[in-house]
Image (tube, rainbow, N blue to C red; front, side):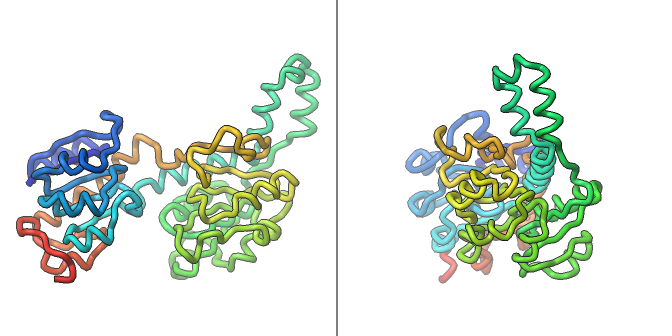
Length: 344
Protein backbone atom coordinates (compact mmCIF):
# COMPACT_ATOMS: atom_id res chain seq x y z
CA UNK A 1 0.00 0.00 0.00
CA UNK A 2 1.22 3.48 -0.88
CA UNK A 3 0.19 6.35 1.38
CA UNK A 4 0.64 10.04 0.48
CA UNK A 5 0.60 12.29 3.55
CA UNK A 6 0.40 16.04 2.95
CA UNK A 7 -0.97 16.77 6.43
CA UNK A 8 1.32 17.30 9.40
CA UNK A 9 1.43 14.15 11.53
CA UNK A 10 3.13 13.04 14.73
CA UNK A 11 6.29 10.98 14.11
CA UNK A 12 5.05 8.02 16.10
CA UNK A 13 1.92 7.91 13.94
CA UNK A 14 4.01 8.01 10.78
CA UNK A 15 5.99 5.05 12.12
CA UNK A 16 2.74 3.12 12.57
CA UNK A 17 1.66 3.94 9.01
CA UNK A 18 5.03 2.80 7.66
CA UNK A 19 4.39 -0.64 9.12
CA UNK A 20 1.41 -0.89 6.78
CA UNK A 21 2.91 0.44 3.58
CA UNK A 22 5.13 2.93 1.80
CA UNK A 23 4.62 6.45 3.17
CA UNK A 24 5.39 9.58 1.16
CA UNK A 25 5.48 12.34 3.77
CA UNK A 26 5.24 15.77 2.15
CA UNK A 27 3.47 18.01 4.67
CA UNK A 28 1.94 21.21 3.37
CA UNK A 29 3.72 23.21 6.08
CA UNK A 30 7.06 22.15 4.59
CA UNK A 31 6.20 22.28 0.89
CA UNK A 32 3.97 25.37 1.27
CA UNK A 33 1.92 23.94 -1.56
CA UNK A 34 -1.76 23.05 -1.86
CA UNK A 35 -2.19 20.38 -4.51
CA UNK A 36 -5.00 20.54 -7.07
CA UNK A 37 -5.88 19.58 -10.63
CA UNK A 38 -3.34 17.82 -12.82
CA UNK A 39 -0.59 18.20 -10.24
CA UNK A 40 -2.80 16.42 -7.71
CA UNK A 41 -3.63 13.66 -10.20
CA UNK A 42 0.03 13.09 -11.02
CA UNK A 43 1.00 13.05 -7.33
CA UNK A 44 -1.66 10.38 -6.66
CA UNK A 45 -0.35 7.99 -9.31
CA UNK A 46 -0.10 4.57 -7.62
CA UNK A 47 -1.36 5.96 -4.28
CA UNK A 48 -4.10 4.09 -2.42
CA UNK A 49 -4.47 6.39 0.62
CA UNK A 50 -4.27 10.20 0.74
CA UNK A 51 -4.08 12.00 4.10
CA UNK A 52 -4.65 15.71 3.56
CA UNK A 53 -5.57 18.96 5.26
CA UNK A 54 -6.12 21.35 2.36
CA UNK A 55 -5.44 19.73 -1.03
CA UNK A 56 -8.32 20.12 -3.48
CA UNK A 57 -9.71 16.66 -4.19
CA UNK A 58 -12.20 17.45 -6.93
CA UNK A 59 -14.50 15.20 -8.95
CA UNK A 60 -11.97 15.26 -11.81
CA UNK A 61 -9.17 14.18 -9.49
CA UNK A 62 -11.29 11.37 -8.07
CA UNK A 63 -12.25 10.11 -11.53
CA UNK A 64 -8.67 10.11 -12.87
CA UNK A 65 -6.67 8.98 -9.80
CA UNK A 66 -7.75 5.38 -10.34
CA UNK A 67 -5.54 3.81 -7.67
CA UNK A 68 -6.96 6.04 -4.92
CA UNK A 69 -9.13 4.10 -2.47
CA UNK A 70 -9.21 6.26 0.69
CA UNK A 71 -9.01 9.99 1.38
CA UNK A 72 -8.51 11.06 4.98
CA UNK A 73 -9.47 14.67 5.63
CA UNK A 74 -7.77 16.21 8.66
CA UNK A 75 -10.85 18.31 9.30
CA UNK A 76 -14.17 17.90 11.01
CA UNK A 77 -15.90 18.30 7.64
CA UNK A 78 -14.05 17.73 4.36
CA UNK A 79 -14.66 21.10 2.71
CA UNK A 80 -11.77 20.49 0.29
CA UNK A 81 -13.05 17.11 -0.89
CA UNK A 82 -15.95 16.44 -3.25
CA UNK A 83 -17.55 13.79 -1.05
CA UNK A 84 -20.46 12.95 -3.43
CA UNK A 85 -17.93 12.42 -6.23
CA UNK A 86 -15.85 10.24 -3.93
CA UNK A 87 -18.93 8.17 -3.19
CA UNK A 88 -19.78 7.88 -6.88
CA UNK A 89 -16.24 6.62 -7.56
CA UNK A 90 -16.12 4.19 -4.64
CA UNK A 91 -13.56 6.21 -2.67
CA UNK A 92 -13.95 6.08 1.10
CA UNK A 93 -13.65 9.46 2.85
CA UNK A 94 -12.58 9.54 6.50
CA UNK A 95 -12.34 12.58 8.73
CA UNK A 96 -10.90 13.62 12.09
CA UNK A 97 -13.74 15.05 14.19
CA UNK A 98 -12.66 17.07 17.20
CA UNK A 99 -9.02 17.29 16.12
CA UNK A 100 -8.88 21.03 16.87
CA UNK A 101 -11.39 21.12 19.73
CA UNK A 102 -8.76 21.82 22.39
CA UNK A 103 -7.09 24.51 20.30
CA UNK A 104 -10.33 26.36 19.54
CA UNK A 105 -11.59 25.98 23.11
CA UNK A 106 -8.37 27.47 24.49
CA UNK A 107 -8.67 30.42 22.11
CA UNK A 108 -12.34 30.98 22.92
CA UNK A 109 -11.63 31.27 26.64
CA UNK A 110 -8.60 33.45 25.90
CA UNK A 111 -10.75 35.81 23.82
CA UNK A 112 -13.44 35.97 26.50
CA UNK A 113 -10.85 37.08 29.03
CA UNK A 114 -9.35 39.61 26.64
CA UNK A 115 -12.78 41.09 25.87
CA UNK A 116 -13.71 41.32 29.53
CA UNK A 117 -10.41 42.97 30.40
CA UNK A 118 -10.88 45.45 27.53
CA UNK A 119 -7.67 44.38 25.82
CA UNK A 120 -8.57 45.68 22.31
CA UNK A 121 -9.32 49.15 23.69
CA UNK A 122 -6.23 49.18 25.92
CA UNK A 123 -3.93 48.22 23.05
CA UNK A 124 -5.30 51.01 20.87
CA UNK A 125 -5.03 53.46 23.75
CA UNK A 126 -1.37 52.65 24.36
CA UNK A 127 -0.64 53.15 20.65
CA UNK A 128 -2.28 56.61 20.66
CA UNK A 129 0.63 59.09 20.65
CA UNK A 130 -1.40 61.82 22.34
CA UNK A 131 -2.22 59.55 25.24
CA UNK A 132 1.15 57.83 25.39
CA UNK A 133 2.92 61.15 25.88
CA UNK A 134 0.75 62.02 28.86
CA UNK A 135 1.13 59.32 31.57
CA UNK A 136 -1.52 60.90 33.78
CA UNK A 137 -4.06 60.91 30.94
CA UNK A 138 -3.24 57.27 30.22
CA UNK A 139 -3.76 56.30 33.85
CA UNK A 140 -7.02 58.23 34.05
CA UNK A 141 -8.43 56.58 30.94
CA UNK A 142 -7.25 53.11 31.95
CA UNK A 143 -8.46 53.16 35.53
CA UNK A 144 -11.61 55.21 35.16
CA UNK A 145 -12.70 54.45 31.61
CA UNK A 146 -11.53 50.92 30.89
CA UNK A 147 -12.08 48.91 34.03
CA UNK A 148 -12.30 45.20 33.22
CA UNK A 149 -14.57 42.40 34.36
CA UNK A 150 -13.85 38.84 35.50
CA UNK A 151 -15.34 35.65 34.14
CA UNK A 152 -16.40 34.77 37.68
CA UNK A 153 -20.19 34.72 38.10
CA UNK A 154 -20.82 35.53 34.44
CA UNK A 155 -23.22 33.58 32.24
CA UNK A 156 -21.64 32.10 29.14
CA UNK A 157 -23.97 30.94 26.38
CA UNK A 158 -22.73 28.33 23.92
CA UNK A 159 -24.60 28.06 20.61
CA UNK A 160 -23.96 24.51 19.46
CA UNK A 161 -22.73 21.96 21.97
CA UNK A 162 -20.43 19.70 20.02
CA UNK A 163 -16.79 18.83 20.63
CA UNK A 164 -15.47 22.41 20.78
CA UNK A 165 -18.25 23.81 22.97
CA UNK A 166 -17.94 20.89 25.38
CA UNK A 167 -14.23 21.63 25.74
CA UNK A 168 -15.05 25.30 26.36
CA UNK A 169 -17.53 24.29 29.04
CA UNK A 170 -14.97 22.07 30.76
CA UNK A 171 -12.41 24.90 30.80
CA UNK A 172 -14.88 27.47 32.10
CA UNK A 173 -15.85 25.30 35.06
CA UNK A 174 -12.70 26.49 36.79
CA UNK A 175 -13.73 30.13 36.38
CA UNK A 176 -16.99 29.59 38.32
CA UNK A 177 -19.17 30.73 35.44
CA UNK A 178 -22.82 29.88 34.80
CA UNK A 179 -23.07 27.83 31.61
CA UNK A 180 -26.05 27.63 29.27
CA UNK A 181 -26.16 26.10 25.80
CA UNK A 182 -28.50 25.77 22.85
CA UNK A 183 -28.31 22.61 20.77
CA UNK A 184 -31.51 20.69 19.98
CA UNK A 185 -29.51 17.67 18.78
CA UNK A 186 -27.60 16.95 22.00
CA UNK A 187 -28.99 14.72 24.74
CA UNK A 188 -29.74 15.93 28.26
CA UNK A 189 -27.07 13.58 29.64
CA UNK A 190 -24.34 15.47 27.80
CA UNK A 191 -25.48 18.80 29.21
CA UNK A 192 -25.84 17.40 32.71
CA UNK A 193 -22.42 15.78 32.60
CA UNK A 194 -20.77 19.17 32.15
CA UNK A 195 -23.12 21.07 34.47
CA UNK A 196 -24.57 23.06 31.56
CA UNK A 197 -28.19 24.19 31.43
CA UNK A 198 -29.93 23.48 28.14
CA UNK A 199 -32.02 26.46 27.00
CA UNK A 200 -33.66 27.78 23.86
CA UNK A 201 -31.83 30.32 21.72
CA UNK A 202 -33.87 33.31 22.88
CA UNK A 203 -33.18 32.57 26.55
CA UNK A 204 -29.49 32.11 25.84
CA UNK A 205 -29.22 35.45 24.05
CA UNK A 206 -31.09 37.32 26.76
CA UNK A 207 -29.25 35.84 29.74
CA UNK A 208 -25.66 35.53 28.55
CA UNK A 209 -22.78 37.87 29.27
CA UNK A 210 -20.79 36.05 26.58
CA UNK A 211 -22.44 34.46 23.54
CA UNK A 212 -20.06 32.05 21.82
CA UNK A 213 -20.95 30.44 18.48
CA UNK A 214 -19.79 26.84 17.94
CA UNK A 215 -22.36 25.30 15.61
CA UNK A 216 -21.80 23.76 12.17
CA UNK A 217 -22.89 25.50 8.98
CA UNK A 218 -26.07 23.86 7.72
CA UNK A 219 -29.13 25.23 5.91
CA UNK A 220 -30.71 25.53 9.37
CA UNK A 221 -27.84 27.48 10.95
CA UNK A 222 -26.86 29.72 8.00
CA UNK A 223 -27.65 33.30 8.99
CA UNK A 224 -29.05 32.19 12.34
CA UNK A 225 -27.63 35.20 14.22
CA UNK A 226 -28.85 38.48 12.74
CA UNK A 227 -30.28 41.82 13.77
CA UNK A 228 -33.20 40.39 15.74
CA UNK A 229 -30.90 38.02 17.66
CA UNK A 230 -28.34 40.71 18.45
CA UNK A 231 -31.21 42.90 19.70
CA UNK A 232 -31.94 40.31 22.40
CA UNK A 233 -28.44 40.53 23.88
CA UNK A 234 -27.50 42.67 26.88
CA UNK A 235 -25.72 45.95 26.08
CA UNK A 236 -22.90 44.67 28.33
CA UNK A 237 -22.62 41.33 26.52
CA UNK A 238 -19.91 40.10 24.16
CA UNK A 239 -20.30 38.02 21.01
CA UNK A 240 -17.72 35.47 19.86
CA UNK A 241 -17.56 33.59 16.57
CA UNK A 242 -14.79 31.02 16.23
CA UNK A 243 -16.89 28.74 14.01
CA UNK A 244 -18.00 30.04 10.60
CA UNK A 245 -18.99 33.52 9.42
CA UNK A 246 -21.91 32.20 7.36
CA UNK A 247 -23.94 31.72 10.54
CA UNK A 248 -23.99 35.46 11.29
CA UNK A 249 -25.20 38.56 9.49
CA UNK A 250 -21.90 40.45 9.36
CA UNK A 251 -23.57 43.76 8.46
CA UNK A 252 -25.95 43.48 11.42
CA UNK A 253 -23.03 42.69 13.71
CA UNK A 254 -21.16 45.75 12.46
CA UNK A 255 -24.16 47.98 13.21
CA UNK A 256 -24.70 46.77 16.77
CA UNK A 257 -20.99 47.15 17.51
CA UNK A 258 -20.80 50.65 16.01
CA UNK A 259 -23.88 51.71 17.96
CA UNK A 260 -22.62 50.04 21.19
CA UNK A 261 -25.76 47.91 21.41
CA UNK A 262 -23.45 45.14 22.65
CA UNK A 263 -20.13 45.59 24.42
CA UNK A 264 -17.86 43.99 21.85
CA UNK A 265 -17.00 40.97 19.74
CA UNK A 266 -14.21 38.49 19.13
CA UNK A 267 -14.04 37.14 15.58
CA UNK A 268 -11.79 34.46 14.12
CA UNK A 269 -13.88 34.10 10.95
CA UNK A 270 -15.13 36.53 8.31
CA UNK A 271 -17.30 36.31 5.19
CA UNK A 272 -14.22 37.20 3.15
CA UNK A 273 -11.03 35.51 4.33
CA UNK A 274 -8.68 37.02 4.90
CA UNK A 275 -10.79 40.14 5.52
CA UNK A 276 -9.91 43.18 3.45
CA UNK A 277 -7.77 45.74 5.31
CA UNK A 278 -10.60 48.27 4.98
CA UNK A 279 -13.17 45.94 6.56
CA UNK A 280 -14.90 48.26 9.05
CA UNK A 281 -14.99 45.57 11.72
CA UNK A 282 -11.20 45.73 11.92
CA UNK A 283 -11.33 49.44 12.73
CA UNK A 284 -13.57 49.17 15.80
CA UNK A 285 -11.93 49.40 19.22
CA UNK A 286 -14.42 46.95 20.71
CA UNK A 287 -13.52 44.13 18.28
CA UNK A 288 -10.85 41.51 18.76
CA UNK A 289 -10.11 40.14 15.26
CA UNK A 290 -7.95 37.19 14.22
CA UNK A 291 -7.28 35.59 10.78
CA UNK A 292 -8.97 32.18 11.31
CA UNK A 293 -6.24 30.68 13.49
CA UNK A 294 -8.41 28.76 15.97
CA UNK A 295 -7.00 25.38 14.99
CA UNK A 296 -3.47 26.56 14.22
CA UNK A 297 -1.47 24.94 17.01
CA UNK A 298 1.41 22.49 16.94
CA UNK A 299 -0.61 20.05 19.05
CA UNK A 300 -3.37 19.71 16.44
CA UNK A 301 -1.00 17.50 14.44
CA UNK A 302 -0.83 15.18 17.43
CA UNK A 303 -4.60 15.13 17.87
CA UNK A 304 -5.36 14.36 14.22
CA UNK A 305 -2.67 11.68 14.10
CA UNK A 306 -4.20 9.89 17.07
CA UNK A 307 -7.63 9.98 15.45
CA UNK A 308 -6.75 8.91 11.91
CA UNK A 309 -3.98 6.33 12.35
CA UNK A 310 -6.18 3.86 14.29
CA UNK A 311 -8.81 4.17 11.55
CA UNK A 312 -6.24 3.37 8.86
CA UNK A 313 -5.15 0.34 10.89
CA UNK A 314 -8.78 -0.76 11.18
CA UNK A 315 -9.06 -0.61 7.38
CA UNK A 316 -5.91 -2.68 6.99
CA UNK A 317 -7.42 -5.33 9.28
CA UNK A 318 -10.67 -5.25 7.29
CA UNK A 319 -12.55 -3.61 10.18
CA UNK A 320 -15.04 -0.76 9.92
CA UNK A 321 -13.42 2.65 10.60
CA UNK A 322 -15.01 4.93 13.17
CA UNK A 323 -15.03 8.20 11.22
CA UNK A 324 -16.55 7.91 7.75
CA UNK A 325 -18.19 10.76 5.84
CA UNK A 326 -19.64 8.41 3.18
CA UNK A 327 -20.37 5.13 5.01
CA UNK A 328 -22.41 3.94 2.02
CA UNK A 329 -19.07 3.11 0.33
CA UNK A 330 -18.15 0.70 3.15
CA UNK A 331 -20.39 -2.15 2.00
CA UNK A 332 -18.06 -4.52 0.20
CA UNK A 333 -15.10 -2.16 0.51
CA UNK A 334 -11.62 -3.73 0.61
CA UNK A 335 -8.33 -1.90 0.41
CA UNK A 336 -6.81 -4.57 -1.80
CA UNK A 337 -9.78 -4.80 -4.20
CA UNK A 338 -10.56 -2.53 -7.15
CA UNK A 339 -12.81 0.32 -6.12
CA UNK A 340 -16.44 0.36 -7.10
CA UNK A 341 -19.14 3.04 -6.94
CA UNK A 342 -21.40 2.88 -3.89
CA UNK A 343 -24.50 2.24 -6.03
CA UNK A 344 -23.00 -0.81 -7.78
